[in-house]
Every structure is written in C-alpha cells, then in structure tokens.
Amino acid sequence: MFGQECNLPSPAKVNITLRIVSKRANGYHDLVSTFIRIDGVEEISIKFRDICDGKDVVQTYNIRIDGENLINSTLSFLRKRNLPIPPLEVKVWKRIPPGSGLGGGSGNAASILHWAKSRWGGDVTPMETSAIGADVPFLFSGYRAALVRKIGDDFTPIESLEGYAFLFLIPNWRVPTTYAFSKLDQHYASSGWPMDEGAAIDETLELLNRLKRGDRVGLLPNDFLPALAEYSNAYEEIFRSVENTGALAWGLSGSGSAAFAIFKGSCEAQRSKQKLSSCRLIDRIMVFA
Image (cartoon, rainbow, N blue to C red):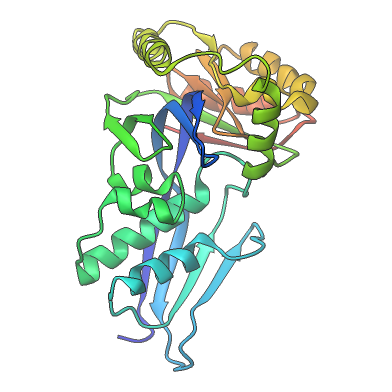
C-alpha cells in the first residue's frame, strides 16, 4: 500500500458570463453565471506516507501557494466524514496561480474528492462540498457546463461549447477574491445591481446560443470588470489584442484576474497564443480544446 503513487488530472473552470443579482444579509452574493469545465489543466500525485507521524505533506511545483492549500481542507473535510484516509504525500503541478478566477485550487479539491470516493466510497454530494470552496461543487459534479445560481451552490447542467478552444490569459497581477468582492460592493453601492435574476438568465442563454451558432459575440458580461477600475486600461489593452486575433468572444473569468478568449478551434487559438506572446501585460498563456 505504501509507496504506490496515483496520478490524477485536475480540472479548472471558466465563467463565460457572471452577473451579481443580489446581496444577502449575511454578506454572500447571489449570482447568475455559466461555468465551463476545462479538464486536465493541472496534475496531482498521491501516495500513502510510510512515516507514521500522522501528518499530510502537500507540495506544489511551478507556483507557490501561501497559507493552507485547499487539498488540506479537502482531506480534513473527508476525515470528518469518517473516511479512513491515512497520512498522504501529495504533489501538485500547478499552472493556475491563486487569484486568477479559474478555480485551479477548487479543481485540485475536486480531484482529491473523486479519488477518495473511488477508493473508500461514501455519500458525499456536490452541494456538501461548498464548505471547501465555492467552485468545488460544480467541479466535483462532473458536468461539462452548467447554469449556476444563488451563491454558486445551485446549478443546472447545460450543453457545453463542444469543439471550441479556450485561451487562458493570466496577467501580471492577481486579484484576491475578498478584495474583488469589496470593490464590487463599493462600485454598485449607489447604482444597485445591473440585472435581476430573470434578466441575467435570459442574457446568458442568448449569448450561449449565439456562440453555438458561431456568431462573434465580443466582450462577455462580468459585473466584476467595471468594479476593478484600477485595471481597466490594462484589460482594455488585452481585449483589443484578443479582438485583433479573430476570437469569437472574450472576457474576465470569475472575480479575476485571468482573462479568456473563445475560438472556433485549437488552430485559431494556437495562432492567437503566438500573436499575444509578446504582450507586456500577460504572464502566461494556455490553450485548451
């Protein structure tokens, strides 16, 4: 049992649209968003430790993670449900930095949850995993795409954008989630939220239908974008560069900082990656099809 290593692919997600439709008394925000699952973004290896000190060892490579990794939170969550998970050595080959809005950490958590369920069973449902992180329920569900509502814990599977390619554009800055939400509240304090839930759902479904027809949609709606005013000029420059490559659509994922673009196929996305590689504002570019 000890020393045997298990390798796991780890997914991420992109928010095609994101509207905030209300704020609850407890401070949480209700949203309407379209989540698309992107598989195989990162990689995890797991093996049982042969040192009986009762501790997990979690190591990340390529990108440093400060504070507690969501993998530690996931293992704690599972052990509280009485799964007999021994001390583990976990290695994570990261490609998505924290504060990118692409759910890399949540994807790591979802992969650990699937691994534990396949080995020990258990009755963990996606909704219960919201205690680990807001994006974990969707990524653990296995759905390719979903219309997401409420605080992220209410989602309905929808048809994904099959055959399309996604370009992830990680800029030179990061946007911590708590900071993004504080700027969001400040920005909309006087004007109120741009849309109610019904209008946001209608908008989302219409944009998805246009993309499936191959229409060029352009900038996709995300209520965090105008709230992050200090980055406005930089995002405008990135989006202008993306537009010039022939993308169908582009936007901000989650609460930032990552931008993304959608292409008809991987060849177009790869050509765009080459054209954008010299952009001074972009730290890294990734293509997923």
